[in-house]
Length: 151
Image (cartoon, rainbow, N blue to C red; front, side, top):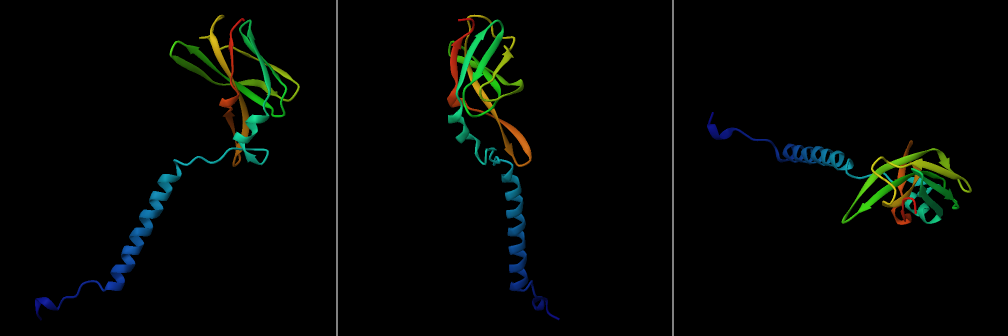
């Protein structure tokens, strides 16, 4: 036998192996990238961002609490309070009410400890939606109300 009589893989087997490798890599990239895409949060069978224009709240801040009156059609789950100071702002995160404030009701939330009388704050309503079987909160940043604590 000669040394040159050895054969390599046939072109068909090589093609099948290449296709399998590409499919495995594509599946891995898809699984990895899926973590970067957020699932849409829904409210009343539509994207939750579309519910924000239906929010109508009146806000007052005094005596260590934020008092809201819900005059809109969407129940308010909580508030996010942003303290504004020169050139910066700091947020409180979502502060939930004891129970959701539905249309025509009022609710109170205590201030975070870093807010005192005379501070400028922005109060943002937070609503609750669904993502799959989970409930998720959504802050309606376009409905922020600016006020001064105690004024």
